[in-house]
Length: 455
Ligand code: BES
Ligand code: ZN
Image (cartoon, rainbow, N blue to C red; front, side, top):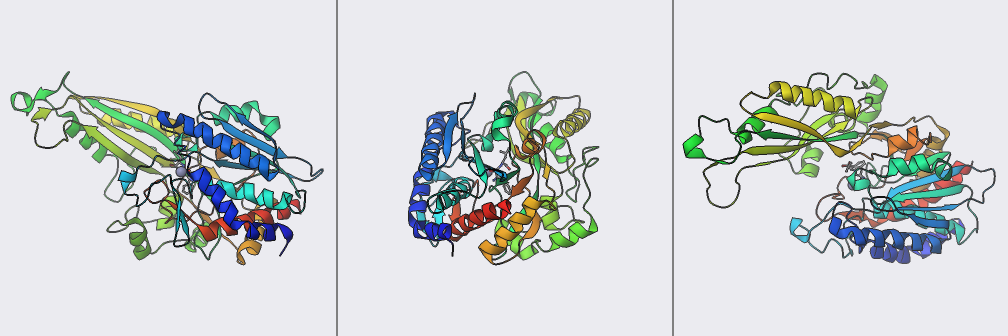
């Protein structure tokens, strides 16, 4: 075992204690009341990076939450690795079904339980500890590294594209590595080569000017909640295909070779039922489950509201109803084009007895597909072989990291997605956790990756 790996092993407990400290800071980016905590997390991270030996660490303010930058640039002639991650987290409330306080990390059954443990504090921290392990033993890195760790990923990275444009020299790199996605299983490492994009919108349906007495008006005024349900019901067919005209026009079809490779990462009906807790799998029958989540776009109703839903009864004919929708997009769909297709279709199917408005919301992102034949990918493959003792398989995932497309387009840097999250980690849900083994194996693999990139 090399010195950096020995250091990582000897300091394993300390690394986890530090991660606990970060997890204790409730850096929920969407909650204005937590803005102070988001700032605190940025400063905590900057301080930890400085102690790791990372230089020029700076907390850059934005018009939202800050970006933490740092670098180590003394590997003359060697490539530069840009490390991206996020220190912000999704909201979490004990009442959502958490066994313990989401911001009081607890280790149980080989897992660290806390909001952000897997997505993404635990995964992002892997890259700080990997670099520390090399710097504290060897004294120098085999490559140059730069960190760009943001605090707004979970709200769609609204301020990062501008930061990238304004700091192209600062962030210039030969490869960008990101650990904010999944791994197939504990025993089978994987490299993600496609992530879905995202488009967020809302549909508002208005009927009468104000809430009406359902006895006095009901039957002769179209109920907006009903009208919205009628519209929503026309967005999919019986087989789960989206019925919006043009929705699938730009979808890049899978090749037979890709479908064969993806078979290795598919789920059985039983596994899917167990993982999701749903009575059965659902969706486009001509595609496998992995293909449905990794290679097909979706139109998801995130929530509907309108009228009365309190205790007891209220005989109201509500004045308005609203639905929140997000679409997951795949290459080569364009969020703007898809928004227009949905808006046109909704306007066309809205009956004249109500008025509909379709509004795009902030937080859209292009889908991502990365080339698997790059030298950086080969370095990642070798790093997994060394860190896991097994070659990784290539897979697609359904989640989104909105800034990845900007890394490709603005910085023109190839991206490697080396995720360590398991589908069962409970990301965004109650009792989120990170498997301790994944954290330590991740550090080992990240150390190997830096040496492999140097070759
Ligand atoms: N880590 C996830 C992205 C992810 C999830 C990648 C699953 C691969 C598999 C990230 O933190 C996330 O949750 N992104 C949001 C972005 C949205 C808020 C714009 C998402 O996918 O919902
Ligand atoms: Zn997330």
